[in-house]
Image (tube, rainbow, N blue to C red; front, side):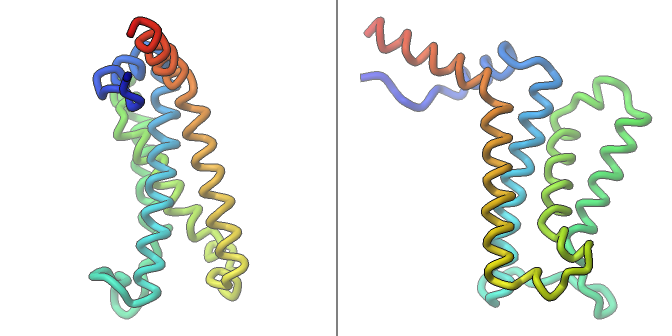
Length: 162
């Protein structure tokens, strides 16, 4: 019986051989967006419910919303894009920072539009969470598709040779 989960080495090899540098950056960005968004939703729900060790961050009595950290990440990414060398622009940390920064901003987009009364309304919040989460997963899937196709071909060829 063949293993369904590909080995890390096969995933790494498919990542580098099947994806061009721009495709790798897109995949890392989508995955960072997805992971940050999902983690952030869980974190904000636990903070709002008063469970767990985490609390809101405030300075001088003013709550620091996480879209501020997202803007800071995008400022850093922009600086690298404008002044960085090509090897720095293509670094996975830049792509991950971009995706994470966007997720931090998108999660609080209603606050940026001054829609405070609907931000935590149950119906509106759930639909936003599901919509953005679905988009994030779909983007990650399509960005990884060339790599996933290769891994599937390798899996099928291993099954045929067993």
